[in-house]
Image (cartoon, rainbow, N blue to C red):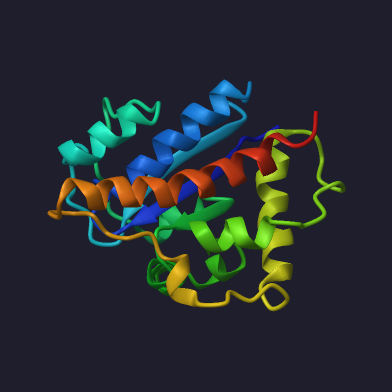
Length: 192
């Protein structure tokens, strides 16, 4: 059975997307999901190619239980987008950029906070037990709820960009990312 492939996207691929990527990996692992069942990667719409994580973002990640070691920023391409089953972005503008790069991604690309909102209260009982299959099914379910569960204010669905800002903004970004990651982990792991 092929793994579910989750792609996390931000601008430079050195702050928000690797933070969410590595937290998602760590939390899935803690929930018993094998890396061979769900593959998590990240990319940037304007990546600082081949750079490691921003130091302050890496510190935030370590405090939240993730490991920044070995991250290397890479550019978002149509091939990277096409290889994913579910794409989560830091902002709704990033989601639009993903779809511009690869239009079929409209069906499986969501802002991280948008996805968490769409999955809240969704009936996931028909999803199969396999984490990889659940990743693929989540895109269908969330996509079907897009017009039904409207955001009260779309600005609340963007993770703040902390790059080159005070440390408190990095903490704010982490505080926004964590609930979205946790909602996604719960949906992928499923009941029981």
